[in-house]
Every structure is written in C-alpha cells, then in structure tokens.
Length: 339
Image (tube, rainbow, N blue to C red; front, side, top):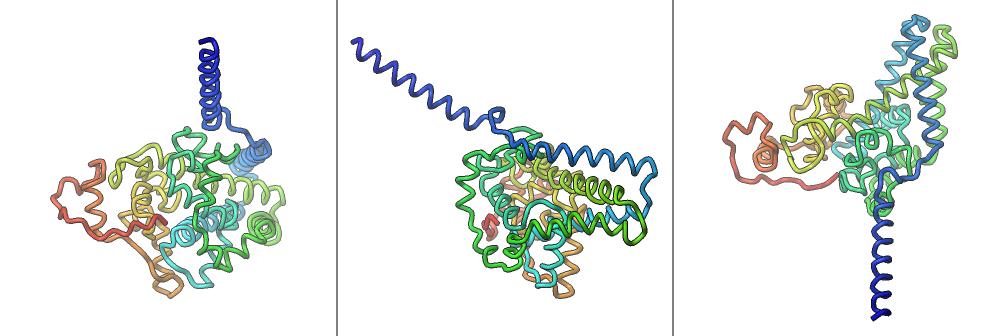
C-alpha cells in the first residue's frame, strides 16, 4: 500500500512537472527576450523622436522632408505590392523589370529579406493566431504589433515553419539573389542612399539625412506594417469570416496602402486586391492595374462577386450591407489555395 501510494505520488509529480513545462513553453511572460533586438528598437525610436524634433523645430529643409516621405512610400509599396501580394500570395506575376523595382522597394523597407518575410507570412496565414503564428494576436496587442520581434520564437513557430512550401521562391533568382546579399543591399538602398541624397543633391547635413531619411522614415514604415498584425486582428468587423481574428479596418487600410481589409484578405488571400472594394483606401491596386495595363504585371487573380457574396451570407458576422439583400445560396466554385 505504501509503495502504491508513493508510485501514485511520483506519477502526480511527473504530471505536474509536465504541465508546468507546457505552461512555461506557452507563456508570454516567460518567453526569452532577445536583448539585442530590444536595444536596436530603443535606439531606432530614440532616433525617430530626435528626427521629429528636428523636423518640427524647422531645422530640416523641405526637400529632405519630401525625400524622406518618398523613400518611405517606396519601401511601403515594395512590401505591400511586392513581398506581400506578388511573392507571398502569388496573386499576380511580374516581369523582371517589375521584380527589380519591387525588390529594391522591399529592401528599402528593411523588414528582412523577401524569402524570410514570405515564409513568416505564409506561416501566419496557415496557422493564424495560434502558437505557430509568429505574431499571434492572442498574446496581446504589444506582442503582435512588435513584441514578437523582441523575443525568441515559440517552439511551434520553428516546427511548423519547416513545413511551409517555399519551392516557388527557392526557384526565383531575384528572391535568392536578395537573400544571399541582403545585408549589402540593405546598407546601400535602406541606409546609405536615403541619407546621402540630401547631402549631395541639396547640401543638407548628414545629421538630418540620418535622423529623418533613416530613423523617422524607417520607424514609420515598420509601424505601418505592424498595425496590420495588431489593429487589423483586434478591432473591427468580420463580414466575410466571423470565426477568425482578422478584421476590416479602414484606418489600417489608409495608412498601409490597402492592407487593412484583413478579414477579406484572410478569406481570399490570393486576391491581388486584398479587399472587396478594390481601390477604396487601397492605392496599391491602382499601381498593380497600371503595371498590368502596360505589360509589367500579369495573371492577376481575384475573387468573383458570387464567391464574395456567398461567403458574406454563409460565414460573415452580418455586418456587411449585402446581408440585407437576398442573394443566391448556391455555392460558387471557390479556390481554397491558402497562399
């Protein structure tokens, strides 16, 4: 009896230890902090604050402010049109000329190389808002906004990340070239050129070039992208799929060139518009359509009105205006390709 009691106690202790280990692995607060990333982000934001001070105290010429805005915009569209819609989701194809432009823009944005960005984003779609999602919104606003970049990845992210098919990008010479030489390309396109242009073209100081065209521009670009992972997963409506976290956010769509229609995007990730209403707060669609008209983009993919209407009526939260109108209940042919 004593032996059985001791054996039972040992089994309980082992079970308790196992449960504690599981909780430890899944705990947000116990996640290992990557201090070098924390320090880098602190420096970036301090530099941004000082750069904004210089700008609002009229110590920066208008030409440098405009240049910084242009570089910011090129980087944002490089991520939105190139890395996100073309390379990650294959929603359209581009000619070598367009790929070159978008690759440079994506490099300017400084959000890691195309290959890694696409892998993480495909992982995010396949295991959205689970422990395998790199920026799981269930772990809180700060984590899914930027905290995920300051701590070690959850074990599930590493395990599931190895299952993501990247063969299409492995076969893309543009992507693999950038992956191989990313650090050099980043230095040239994201750091040196933005800082040097104001100095050599209109005689501004290196200080202004550094703090405005690099620190301010870079920080704003990052936060614009991060709002898609945070705000667009937490605050808004779900007219297309009610049982997922992503929402519709006109605010995020406005500041990210159309990436805020996130409930639609997670429902139809392969749609090059990334939103039902095309160009509404979605200027990236204008550019893709322009590229298509001039032969630089082709094989554009989009959901049909019937597919969208069916999804709204069957899976949405009832917030869409179409819910007030009777539509055909026959299920259309829907492409379930995750990417």
